[in-house]
Every structure is written in C-alpha cells, then in structure tokens.
Image (cartoon, rainbow, N blue to C red):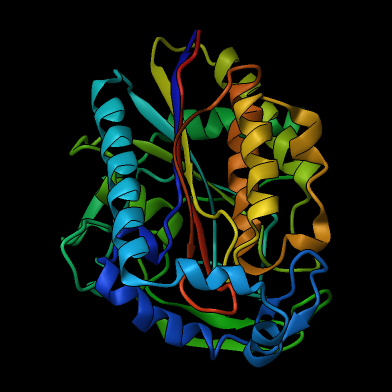
Length: 345
C-alpha cells in the first residue's frame, strides 16, 4: 500500500516574496480593494470605513523596520520548509488549492475538482520585483500522476463525494464570476487568455519544491465563490476521504500532501488566524470544522486549503515554522503569512 511521508504548507500572498521596501506600495493597492470587511463582524466596508474603526495599535507595525524583521522570519520559514521538502523521499505530491478566476468560471464552477491528466502546463507569472523566489520562471510541462488521480476519484465517489474531474487544459480560459450571495455582490469578468497551472500550486513548485520535479495531483477546492463554496466541515471531510484513498492505494509509492494559501487577507484577522493555527497544531478537528463562516470571506477562505490538508494528516499535528501578521496599512489590511510542516509518526 502507499505510504504518506509528510505534509507541507505555506501562504502564497505577496508578503511571501516581496522585499520590505515594496510592502507600502502594495498597501496602496489595498485602498482600492472592494472586498474589505470588518473584523470580527465580517461586514463589508470601504477602506475609509475600515480605517475609521481600526485599532490605533496597528500603527506600530506599519513601518519599514517591522517589515524587514517580518520578511526575514517569513523567508527563514520558507527556507526551512524547502529544506524539509528536499529531505523527504516522495514519489508524488497530492496538492489542495483554490482557484481564483484561473481555470473555473460560472460556465461551470465545481466545488471539488481533481485534475488527472498526464501533465499540467506551467506558464510563468508576471515577475515580482525583488530578491525572493516565488513562481517558476520557465514555461514547462509538470508531470501529474494519473494513476493516483483515477484511484482518488473512484475512491471519493465511493465515499459519497460528488467529484468533478478534468484531464486536459484549454487553450484559453476566461469568463465571469458573480454576483451571487454573501459578499459576492458584483460581477468580475476576465477575457479569455492562455493560463497555466493556478497560483495555489504554482508558488510551492517555484518556492519550496527544492528543485524536485516530482509528479503532483492537483485537487481544486472552491473556497472563494458562493453559492457552492465549500464549508470548513466539508473541507476537513474531503481531506479525510483523500487520506483514505491514499491509504487504500495498492502502490508502493510514497505520497506527500501539500497546500498553499491564506491565512487571513486582505484584512488581517489575527484572532481567526490563531484559531486556525491552534486547530492545526493540536490536530483539533472540532476547531477546524467550526471556524466562523462569516469571517471566511474572499481570500481568507484559503484557510480551508489548510483545513483539508489537516484532514488528510489526521491526528498528526502541524509543526509551525512561521506566522507573521503583516499589516501594510493603518486600516489593518495585509496578510497572515504562515508556514507549517507535518511529519507523520
């Protein structure tokens, strides 16, 4: 039977790859974000409304000295994750990730999709100025494990999960998303364009796969977009079901499980981050499956990628490598930047 040999996760937001002197510039972009919410109420507001009710103590974190210290800690965490990935012997990596107007639009928006083609095409993302690595810089095809993909799909169907599946990429991706329920009250349209692997998979490949060209199995979760976005309890159950599939796979391959995304952003919600962080460090399914839905909006929903990964790792606790609440503006916008590792007993 197959053997799970480790779990790996990190955030993939801009503070993972930008030098400190560019954080303020990205903070200016936060002021135009139309999906800002109050913490902890989850009420949609403008930047000026958010600023008016922000904690004045945030001001002590919005400075270049703090940014430089946080950049150092974040990069140390990512370097350590890369080292551990390098030292782990695996044959395939199952990856949980969300899609944000990349492969899926409202012509067909699956809650869960397993991609099991022979390969997945990688297109470099626009370069981020600075000295830190992020996405792959060369166009290429990355290997996928279709044998495991088929097994996972069949196993999930037997476990009463209704799974979408795909085996090849399109020449161009585009369409619209929204409006719907909850916070999604406007329409977003993207003109068709060539697109490679989504960002939730791309950053791990480029930043902490340590040069290993190991096959992957991408499992996309609709964390972001109502009305059929996944719940915390369903994300955890999905992880458990994927783990059962891997454990039942009649193969001698060694399997790692990974994800990227989150934690809270574009408004930092340290309380929510700490809640999720505690659930991951204690392998506490009760905490993770009852995360408050009204606070899981927009990109903060990427926390559910971690919830699915913890479901797959079961009783194995996450070892925290980094957590930094990176405030980019006085209003409290920014990112809860995190890095973690699971080493099975």
